[in-house]
Length: 491
Image (cartoon, rainbow, N blue to C red; front, side, top):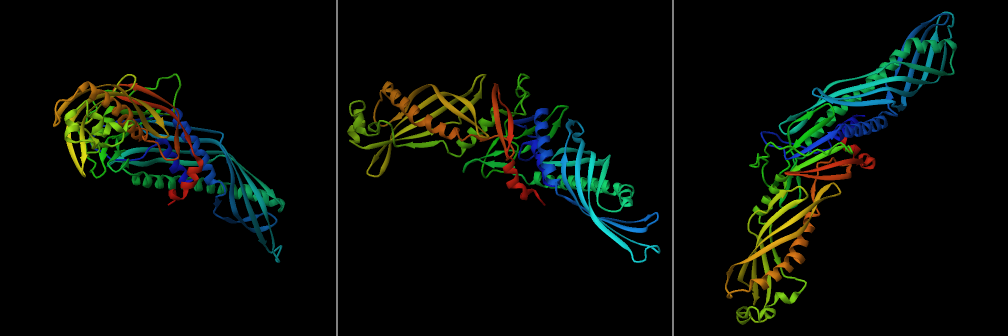
């Protein structure tokens, strides 16, 4: 049960990791009562699986039996074979998260043996056999709280307990007096052994989870350039029907130290999913998340590309331009060319009511390739705007750009005046067939949503509420993944 309780409370979070300070959270995660119920059911299934086949300590007593004498009775191989849960609940509030299992039943098996010696029976007698125990009313409860501790989540066990209200014993074989001895002398010991075993598992699970929470990474590497800061910000907010957590959510350079950044979220609130179709989790991302990514990649000089292939490859040879730009062909007859494209400022990204608007300024330098030398001959500035439709790919938030409009102007030229209306046509081809498809291939990789490994987004709905994008979703759980990871959670 230790790893199971550990996994449940991670499930209640559906998240990874940590930092603190005076930063704003730019990703908000709200786990609804529906999500909490889902996590609770997972816990119960996994907890039952881990408790079943557990063996309790051996119990032995010496009792005085009328007309028989002193009998030494030993109960061994006491095994919990099955647990059935009839009722359970999870509740949140300012004081913590409370999980209660009530009215559960448990089936146990055991071996018994006894030996009797007295002056009436000097030779002594002994016997052995088996018995089954039915726990008819098992109550289990625990209350925990979550606090932000220097950027990680600290799990605090406030209270826990297990109580067996009633049990019955069925003896297989043995003398008539033995049954009454088991009921009178051993029923309380068996109940206490069950209570102590489950309580111990709860404490072990909380300790394991606390260590695991503090070991989770503070950033998720995205590629060679950027990482996503998934640090927790402030303490989780526990209301009567949900848990809300804030994550820093901003992009950082791979080698940057996590420090508060200059973006300010303001006083706006993330969007609600509405009441029409309740979902388990709501993940809201502020547009500053995307703006921070834009800045990181721009600062790292990652927004530069060399174009040496086009659908109409002839356009990348000076011969194709001999009538349109005579001076180009005169100076560099029949030479190949390439286009050196670089973003001149961080792309501007804004969430609108129906999509994400993107404005990008690009300088396209025309290079002539002559005798192994790259010779810049002209530079054209392009201002284009695009719309980005957001979609879910796996557990990632991805997007798809569509060109809206663009404009061009000549920045400088070493080959005389250019006919910009003709350049406009070539630029359109480059944007539509090269740049936009390339950017889409990168955007479709997406950025990871804060979902715990082993869980998957399911039936997601995307809402736009400037400056927020909100993902309302249910989740599914891979029990196979949990079984593969189980040894890692056992301390």
